[in-house]
Length: 301
View 1 (tube, rainbow, N blue to C red):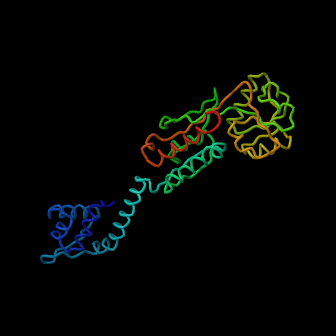
View 2 (spheres, rainbow, N blue to C red; view 1 turned 135 degrees about the horizontal axis):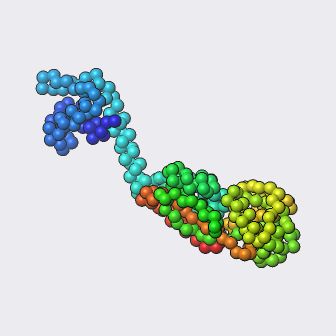
View 3 (tube, helix red, strand yellow; view 1 turned 45 degrees about the vertical axis):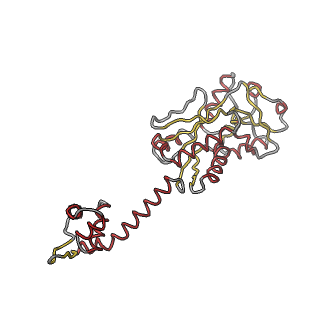
């Protein structure tokens, strides 16, 4: 690896033809230039110059390095400009990992806000459920992770992640519109003990089974899917009913499906997680602010 300062000095020595002229152009002393060139030769492991009278001549290694210095310095200049642009929020990238219902509700509004206020910052979305999404954040594979937990079923959070509460998401039940209990504003879970059910993702299913056990019954699960649209279609077709978070009601696609609050009231907690070091990155911090603002507008906040 070459020190970029030495490369810049080497380029100036070649351009001007002497250590003295390079020192004058760079604002260095002549001994400082000489020391840098000796250090660069130690780094490359071979001489770069030979003395010819009072002048300098490039060795074969020096000629080789000369062919690359322009490209190296140009690349460094471009890299510095891109870093400056990120720091000034003219550009940048924020990778957000979210579970499906957050990706369908909170993220679109947050991304629209970022696009309007900071058009040079690119927000990328990856879909993943906790706890894997939290492990992705801890490994630095994403900048912000949205995850959820249920009462009594808290997910283990790696210590290097900072946690930000976004909202409380009430649980609801999806019923076919013609269901006798669809006329109620809220439905007691025990009244649904003899229904067939459609279960969701692993964590949602675990919470569902726990809630049913609390009400004294074991549910008849007809099928399982973590696809919200598939779940809605199955409910609409009369295959079964489903317990889902209220965020899902924001994108009900079937006129034949009705959502009702489940009693006793249970709420899942939705959080954003960020590596503590990433909070110092301007684009990540602003994207987090946009996500918090979008969550505040959602149900249960």
